[in-house]
Image (cartoon, rainbow, N blue to C red; front, side, top):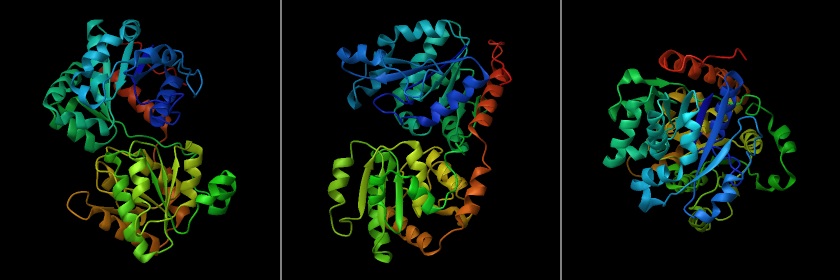
Amino acid sequence: MLLTVSNLYPRPDQPVRGLFNARFFSELARRHATRNVCLVPEWRPWRWPAVRAWADPRGAELGTGYLPVFYVPLAGRSLSWRTYAWSLARLERLIAGAEAVLVTWLYPDAVVAGAMAVKHGRPYWVKAHGTDRFHLASPARRRRVLKACLAAQGVLVNCRFMAGQIAAAGVPAERIHVVFNGVDAERFRYRAREEALALLPAGARSMCGEPLILFVGNLVRVKGPDIALRALRRAREAFPDARMLVIGRGRLRGALEREAQGPGLAGAVMFAGERSNDEVALWMNVADCLCLASRSEGLPNVVLEAQASGLPVVATDVGEVPELLSGGARGRVIAARGGGVGDRLGAALAEVLRAPADRAALAREGRRRASWGRRAEEALGIMRKHCPGAPRLVSSGA
């Protein structure tokens, strides 16, 4: 049995959290017996029984269990490896009975689960996502992450940019393996705007605008929603009727809503909160452009999904984004460093809006990217090759 461990996975209170992991783990399970554990940071122990009783909102396919972990936000970050270890006795039992372990997120997840795997003589793999690399900026955390990565069979990353970041931290390049993210091509596909509008909930249609710019991401600083609002303000100089639909949740929402009432933005920004993947896919058919304003990324799935939907993308040059958007027909990339990022991003948005793309052709190009099933096959192939301690880790042929 392969045990997957991640804090990035759908939960009853956050049903769209880590959907990319959910799809990846599901495809692994189609090919090999897999059990999943979702770690839930929760500093209030009296809530732990309710967390343990959660059921996977995606069904019982992975036999997902939810394990609360004691975590003090921000100030307790550097000690969270200790608090995780203290509260994860059940995870240790699961690791002891596993054939191999795949743990995602560098710190503290990989640090703690990796130490447990070593204790019980179980081979394990670390999967880094992109945003989690910020832990490498802390010397204390970097040392622990490096130790976990060096003790692992190897490190899976979702793009070449992340491979470089992990290598720069001290992991030998031959121990790092790139497995790109996939796209749910049945959900994210080209549809005519009118067809997508007809499929949206009636109340959602009131959020339409023309032109419509789409922002999809957590409302946290690293995703740059504040930059996106500045970009919209600049784009409205050329397109006064332009509006932005913001899909996502996060602690910055209140501040962003206040900013959206200011000059140049009043009435132009709609905050939709968290939405299902099915609805996001429809909005990608309705919108005229996706704005990715992130300050840091690895390989953002939202760009892959937009491309599969035929939606042009304007983005900052973070992570693997320049490679994804190479070729002007796919969108525009602007430097994330230096002053005036929002203004430059807004100017690029205006350029794309002036020259409508062949959406069906963009979607055909985007759909050529490998499926999640293919990515799961690649990952299992790497683990079989580099995991001699787990000879039964083989494909079932599914």
